[in-house]
Each structure stands twice: as C-alpha cells, then as structure tokens.
Amino acid sequence: MKHPSWICCQLGAREHYAIARSLYQAGNLSLLITDAWVKPQSLLNSFPNPLLKSLQERFYPDLVAAPVASFTGSLLRFEVSHRVRKTGDWERMIARNRWFQKQVIRHLEAIQSRRPFKTPPVLFTYSYAALDILCYAKSKGWMTVLGQIDPGIFEEKIVLAEHQKHPNLASSWQPVPPKYWEDWQTECTLSDCILVNSNWSKQALQQVGIDEQKIEVVPLVYTPQSVAKNFQRTYPDRFSQQRPLRVLFLGQVILRKGAAALLEAAKLLQDKPIEFWIVGRSEVTSTDTCSHNIRWIGAVSRSETVKYYQQADVFLFPTLSDGFGLTQLEAQAWKLPLIVSKFCGEVVIDGINGKVLPEVTGGAIAILLQSFVEQPQLLLKLSQSCHSQTVFGLSKLAEQLQALT
Image 1 (cartoon, rainbow, N blue to C red):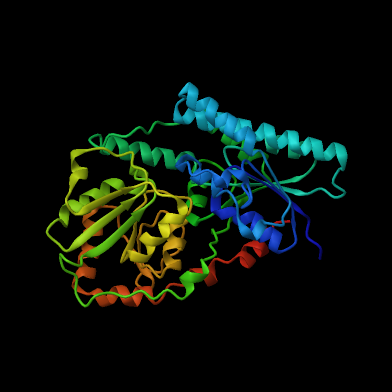
Image 2: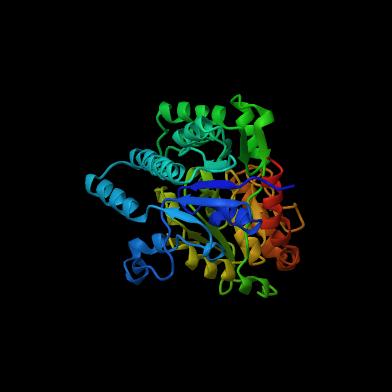
C-alpha cells in the first residue's frame, strides 16, 4: 500500500526535525518548510558572532538531500526589526508565528501555481503557528495533522498556581493573551488529527474539551550521537566534598520546570557532598538561589550540552508539566540516570533506568539524592539499563505517522 506524501511546516528546530526526518527516511516527505535552514557551506557559518550560534545549528545532516524550503533572510530581518523596536517576548513570539504562516502560505501558493499536487498531501504543522496554514490546507481538501507541542491551556493554569505559590521567586512570566488560546482551540477544531507526545498531554487536552478521538500519542524520538553509544559511565565508591554527586538540571530555569523544588532541595542538602549544575537561561531570581552547592552555568548552545551530560552523575527533571521533555532522551543516550516527575513523557521505568518522584517537592528530590550518596552503586545499576535508542526510533515514528492516513 502506497502512503500519501507529507508536507511538514516547522518553525524552529523542534525535535531535531524528527517528523521530517522519519518521513524522509520512509520516502514519504514531499517538502519540509521551515523558518531557517543553514547548510554547512552557508556564509552564515563563517561569522563567529555568538548571537548567530543557534541559527547556525538550523540544519540536520539526515536532510541534506531532502526537499527543504526556508526563509532565513526574511527571518533575520524580522528578528532585527523586533530587537530594534524592543518588543516584548509574547508580542514577538506571536508576531513570529504570524510571519511564518504568511511565508508558508505564499510558498505553497507558488508551488500550486507552477505544479499542483497530483494527489492531496498530508499537511503537518506545529501548534500556535498553525491556524492560517490549516485553513489553507483545508480549503484544498488536504488531510491536516497538528503537532501539539505542550499540554495547552491546562498547563498554563498549573503554571499560574505555581507562581502564586512562590511569589518570592521573581519571574518575567505572564499568561498569554486570551486570543492566543482562542486561535489554538480553532487549530484543534480544524485538525483531522492531533499528535501529542505523552499521555500527560492527552489528559490535559481532554480536560479542556478536545475530542479524544482526534488525539494520538506519539512519543518524541532521539537519535543518539555515535560517540554516545560507546560512552562508559563510572562512579566513585563514595561521594565526598572533593568528588561530590553531580546533579544536572538542563533547560529553562523556570517555575514550570520545577525550579522551586530544585532550589528547595539544594537548600536541604547543603551539608551533603552534592553539587547542583544548572545549565540554561534562568528566569528565577531570589536570595534563595545563592546556595553554595549550586553552580549556575547559564545558557549554552545545543552542541555544548554534551559535556554536561558526560560529566554529570544524575539528571534531574522535576517538571510540573511538559509535552514530553526531550532532555530525558538526550540524558539517557549518555547513560545518565534520571530523576523525573510524572507530568511528562514516559521515559523512566521507576527503579530500572531512573526514579519517578512521588511528588514535585524539594523534600522528595532530597530523599532520592541522599539515597544515591549513601549507595553510589545504585546509580551504576540505573545507568546500565538506559534504552532510549531502541524504544524511540525514527522507524517507529514513521510507522506511527503512516498509520494515521
């Protein structure tokens, strides 16, 4: 049976282009349309400016010969314009979503005028930058698939409650404008199928009335670097102040990701041989963040995260809500045991390749970390059971996508 071809519309480098890569590998990708695509030979790679670092990583070798359309020059003009005008984060993000949709529709119309598709393709696009694209696709009679990147408005309610609970942890977070959620609800209505990455997201969407029959759970995939497969992780016989247990928290340092519980755990464990490495841009400010057992490393590029995965002893992901949490798979690829919450993708089998927190609190985190200090061999046992590369592969993803049509 021949499966229909897909058009993938993607703003940003989400999932390392996994949807497009899996379809291309299976021979079903008609076109990837993305905001920026910087091939290795591009002049942009010759500039050392650190501001261009994330842009220079907008490429994936698996797709070097794939049909890709991008608007890199237009994106640069957009970003410069908004920097000059000093627009707010939400205003800029919503404007970028609209800009991308206009670019996509203009490109699709140009294709249709030159050489219309012989058979209707399946159009895939990610949430919040999808409404106009979905309207266009539906007008052409195409099947539409929405990639839901997070648990939606249900998650916002959780975040709001956490901010009210911790007013001492100053943050720039603000709820999105109501129109944002109105448009999202319309995106869900227009979509023939909604892909979520975890059962947690599916439950969240059902909580706000999204049709359960439309929702398909498709976990994220991650292809480990070849060097990670032979990486050997070791642990000392005992942890000490000279060689403490190194706990890695990598990602946005925000309340939604469990920052309050992280800081509480660090405070509870100040007299233990434990060091917290916090890698990522922080939106949390408080005198509580000055604990001597915390190393604030700050934001790093995607390529720089490797050394932290390699050198850490355990990965901490105490999120209050996540669509999946790709960092779980990245950490596992480096055989790094995980401590995670229940409110994300199901990567950890409790007691096999990591530990699942009974609740997201500093006390619960502290108890687990203390057990690892007392029994370092437990970490080695968990490390040896990492299995992400076999469970979450590109071939499996392609099969799941093809089954939708």
